[in-house]
Image (cartoon, rainbow, N blue to C red; front, side, top):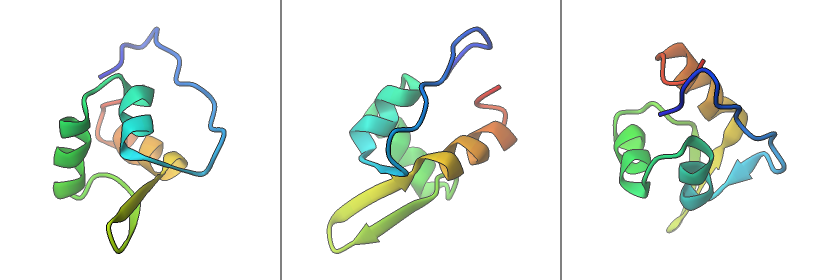
Length: 68
């Protein structure tokens, strides 16, 4: 989780991997998986490939108080 003084990097691509999203938020891959299972994050899954919509994930986490 981030503190209020931590600035989230600007989005370079609209969809990113689980690893990139974890780095963005400063959490481990397992936390991303838990948020997926809880239905918090916005993602696409085609076959075994998962990509996360960065702006949608930012907004979802902001609404739940994980981001400021």
